[in-house]
Amino acid sequence: MRAVPLTLAVLLLVSAVAGSGPALAPNGPPQQVAQGPSPDAALTPAAPDSTPALGASGASGPPNAQLSGPSGPSERLINVLAVPDGEATRSTLETEYVELGSGLGFSADVTDVRLRTESVIERVDATETREARQRYLLQAVSGVEQRVVALRSRQRQAFTAYGQGELPPRQLLYELALIDAEARELEERRSRLQTLARSTSGFSISASRFGNIELELNTLTGPVRGYAAAVLRGEATAGRFFVQTGSNSVALAVIRDGTYVREVYRGSLRGENSNSFSLAEAVNATEQAYPTVADLRLRDDTLGNPDSDSARVTIEHRRGRLVAFVDSGSKRVFQEYQYRPIDQVVTRSPASATRDAMTLTAHRTYPGGPVRLQLNSTETGEPIDAQITVGPAGGRSTVVGQTGPDGSLWTLAPNGSYQVTAIDGSAVVILSVQPTSTPAVYGTRNESNGTGTATPERSA
Image (cartoon, rainbow, N blue to C red; front, side, top):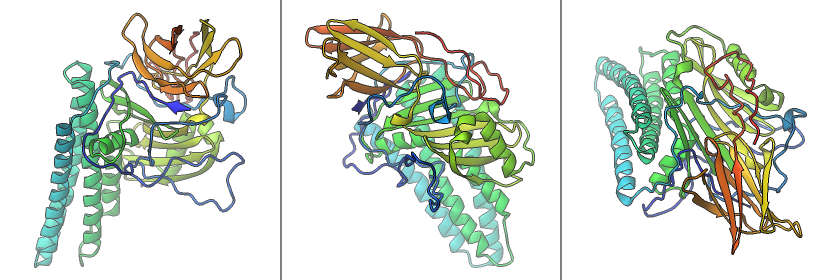
């Protein structure tokens, strides 16, 4: 089975930079556990700003992998953080390419940040007096904090420009990938500065200050934008990306190596003032937002302290992995990363069309979610390997791939109604599809009751 994600804003990043290698992080997608946790299984959550080892875009799984109809926790929909309907500012459907110049420019920008880190560390190391060393350390830590503020502002400006049509989809993803890369370099700088501070006699910078910087940098990174950065550096193969923005929000998704990867940031869910809160409260807020994940939990991990602006909760579960960031002011999840093997994805209400002895079925999902398209012969029931196009009703369609020998193809559902066409020689079948409602954590209309209840589903 092959998987080719089609996006609300579909961005095909083709790196022309020489060389190919593994994606950003060594941590692969979460292992699938069918019978529950092993008693000696170790907790090994991926770093929140890391990308699972994302390889080729092909995704495999049995044709009946997606389930329909709620039953136990293993068959219920998993909630997602989403940009509310009334907040979404722009949706596009297009394919973009990154030229050689873009990749080289990206690498140069990242190298500049890395060189600045080396310069800062060298300056601290080269000091001859304890007083100067302390002064340089404080300046360097403050410099990282100022860059966090600057990157947050830059990200919001990118959301606004994209929403107003001033920034093309490709450039938005480039900006987010660059912010991700700089945030990762700044985290390396923060870590080394913390080590230097600890080794400086008679001087200390609070661990909570370093911890808060770490968490804030985490929220400027993500597995999807991190993968886009890997493509730009020539370290990963091309990919198509789902992109949607709000006034201070973004939703990104990609299907890579048989795993649906999603990241969402909603700045509007952050409180204006930080309050002291415990890690237990952060876990409770996450469980309320994602009840199915809580029911399927195998193990979890937390990061934060009472003085942090946010806390990070990582939950490994039977159908994937969730990383949630909870704001200390609002006590709500404002950012998520989700990793879900596509053969563990649950959908509702399949829609089908028949013509020219072919039956085309879409196992529907919400906008930006993974949808499986299945093509079979109406005469024999055998799968058909054919070309598939997807596009807006009455608009221009895009070829998203072949169904393969099992007649199945995974892609990402666009926003709004769309048309799927299967073409096998002179035989053609066309299917109109309406995405299902998003199982949004806080509703689809900027509501927040903490229950994670999805709005009623629309029919096909």
